[in-house]
Amino acid sequence: MALLKYLPQELIRKKRDGKTLTNSEIEFIVKGMTDMSFTDSQLAAFAMAVYLKGLNMEERVSLTLNMMNSGDVLSWSDLDLNGPVVDKHSTGGVGDKVSLMLAPIVAACGGYVPMISGRGLGHTGGTLDKLESIPGYNAIPDYDLFRQTVKTVGCAIIGQTARLAPADQRFYSIRDITATIESVDMITASILSKKLASGLDALIMDVKTGNGAFSATYEMAQEVAKSIATVASNAGVPTRCLITDMNQVLGTTVGNSVEMHECIEFLTNPSKADKRLLKITLDLAAHMLEISGITSDLKSGFAKAEKALVDGSAAEVFEMMVSTLGGPNDLITSPHKHLAATSISKPIVAEKSGVINAMDVREIGLSMVAIKAGRVKSTDLIDHSVGLTEFAQIGDHISKGEPIAMAHVRSNSDYEMLQKRVSKSVRRTSKKVVRSLNKHKVVKHVNKVGKNISLAIPRRIDITTAIKYARLIRHHKMRVLFCCRAFIHRGRPSGLIHEPRWMYKKYIDCLLRLIGA
Image (cartoon, rainbow, N blue to C red; front, side, top):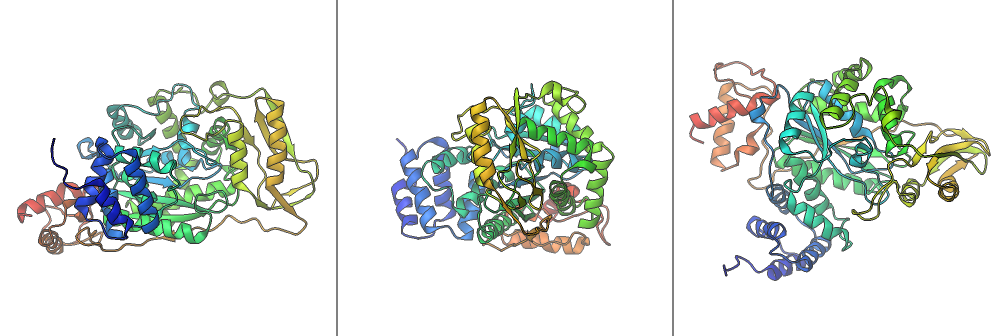
């Protein structure tokens, strides 16, 4: 039997006592997650120690990168993509279907979006559940099909495979049953280990806050946003976080098939889209286009995204993605033919008159779980057909007896339960309420952490300056990963570099070889 480099219980003790773990120690722990040399009880104890004592920024970066490297790390260089690889991740909310429209919009604008999404758990819905309401859609394709879809279509929304950040898969399942989910340190590592393993050039985070979000308070959302932006940037991936509102249902539908219908209507008839949903989708698209270098600023990014939506090119990309991954090729034109529907549709009516001024979004989400639109355990089966449509928004005046939403259910008992719970979750007032599209808080925060430094290299630099940066990287023994924002042209010894962001890899490798780095 080989001697262990460390004893698991001693590393747990070290963190329990509030001491700092080295990169080597964290690497050992993550290896133990993957090869099962750490027992479930040991990982549970480690999770609780981290929950209680926390990690410093250097430990967060180390945990994230080691979990990322626990499985496959995707590379897109061999596909000769003519645009940047960029993605978005949301912390989740009720009615959050943004990814379904956002990925095709950005792809139609010239980006490549390999989006690894999850299923719903608890009161929030999952992007993957919505896509799996489409007959035939392959949410877990093999890597060749996934990569080819990204290359030919521009985007692919799939689920996490066993080969991508397997350490996170095991560690998350243990955190889920040990009351250690609510840890900014482990949230950061869990999200970013999967996203960084996707081989991204840039990342946008949608951090939800409000009574329907994981981060119930703005302060917690801000902490999560700063942590994610800092760790990702120090791992070499420019990241920006938007803090967005989840104090009301996003859009007008909640469920799986019904949200797919709203998505299709959004892409094919954007003039009729819910204004709040439209704004947040285009805002996120603008940030993705700007941070990845496709556009020079947010204003032009917003305009470009809006054009792709209005002229139908985003809808075409969505249709291609669905058909390439096994779904029907006429989903856009004939959604009712393919998406499951219930036999019972009844209005949920207001029990008193007034203007809607607040919602208990979490309760609305939990009522969806009760009719099997969501799940309590990861193994639960869901009913894709049930849900709510035509959901009223804050600022709407509803008279007594008028519908707050339409319920699509399997039984009258489910309808009666929804009538009671949803009606009570929507609060009304006699006072005037101003409808708000909710301006988003943008968080950009980068710390330098030891040798894990992401240099702030300018977008356009001359060859002399580029060599200076490359020598600095060599001197500090930084990984090549962390110099990925230099833009070098071999044939241009002077002057400014105007190559697009995605061309850096070919040139930086050549430069580093020339100077012996």
